[in-house]
Length: 245
Image 1 (tube, rainbow, N blue to C red):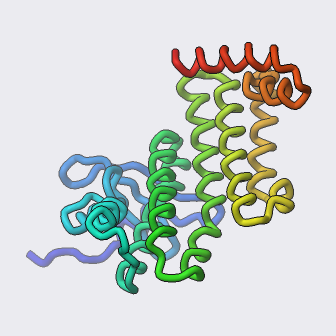
Image 2 (spheres, rainbow, N blue to C red):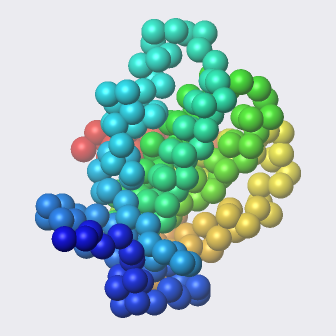
């Protein structure tokens, strides 16, 4: 019996819409969940665990973990051309799955994939072959942080139905992005950055919709700025107690 190799039936029953992200969760031939993304002229299929392409890299579940082991064995490791290509492959795969998780509203999974990418960025900065290669990847860090912050905030709403937790997640993400701008001596561009503006708009929308006043951390920051140190100490104790609980 001749094996069918084309995608005609699949593509015919699932039209591509260029105005939205076309994503769905389906069952694989063995019953496992897989993600499918309809793209122009085709379909991408991604695994839900491990590497999105399902590959094992030198016995490791991802290229990140392979590199982590390699660095432990050789602290002076520097990426060669083939390894740089593998890094780029993994970045792209996790990007595709991250936006799929966001579209499917699996926010905790989106956070996990963003964290994987950020760890890979951190490691690659350490073992980069040159500064130019590092810059080509670091320029995307705010974008990854933007996705992570979105997912963390919306995930907080799903889990706790708490607007305050969501606002706190956005504030934390904004501060991380600010530190990126400071590190690269571009803090003057922080407030006008499109991603920052969009996160602030989301924060204020959630603050209004869920009637969230100042969070504890915002009150603490204001108390320190106004030199109200006794109040700041009480707020810090309350924050520590909440974190411990």
